[in-house]
Length: 448
Image (cartoon, rainbow, N blue to C red; front, top):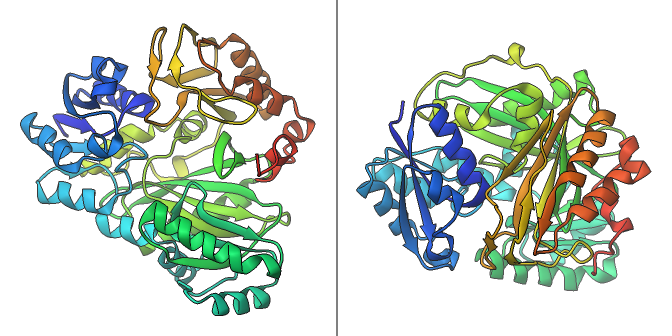
């Protein structure tokens, strides 16, 4: 087992990894920008190294500084968390070259699954259902229009290297296609340095269902069930839950088997998530694979009892998975609300100083956060303050528990999304599980 791990991240996920390491008897190294000098992940790590000024490109994305920090502190491994360098194949390669274990998949898997067109092709070869669309990258507008006519509108244009909704355009009618195609290419180039896009048939009322898998380096791969992530705005998730209200045991097994088949096809190791779009008839289609631990991993932990971060560390150290597929049983229901420092009406950032902070507690309540009273939320990074997670025997009880926990959650000094979460939980369609990725349009039009 590793003796010391460097966490190449910040905020709640850095603190989450530090906690797992402490419980495993592993020393930790925190890296931080000058803006995060007083952050909790810096305080609770065994060692800390400043790696640059506030801007991410000079600190949390500064590969030479991070590698140097690992070398001078004798860290044997690096956990990237999510975001920043977590899905950067070049960073994984640099770690390997420096003799430092990257706690995640191989660079080859990251590259393959990071290219949306190649990932789609790989999924199809593995027998995983995919949405009808272009066989690969499509560069000519005339070819794209012809394919869109063949598929039938609406269609969606996606950046090959996309993520977070960037480089993505839904086209309802042919008259809108030409401008949308150019805009998607331009945004993809600006966001990812790669203008390549592809075209798919668009499902108008999809559910976003994802399967968590974890694999060791001996070829064992296990599915940990599904998460429902349909409550989102501009492709950014707001509320996640496990299990999904509409996935029964046979469908869970079918989706899990498909996810494992894809992971095997790319010789995957460590934690990963296969994301699917589900139609109203419960047919599902591969969307993408996230080659890292997800923000929403706690809901899976709550219903399975598996500590995903500890398991990531164990398998990266060469250990066999500590469980088999038949030992994974989904118990109860878990919901996660992402509490962000944002104006709840417009979802615009609200950085500043937290003047009062009282996280909720009680049975079945978990709060993953790195915030505290007088903590300054910097304007340089993601605006998430905390992840509020609850677990109960049933979905109805979990909703009630989340409402209670939200009422107890006091955050003053900045605006938060707590009022919006309460509004969503009170919605009759949400309570009945009648949701899709279009759910938030009832509160906010896409243009706002």
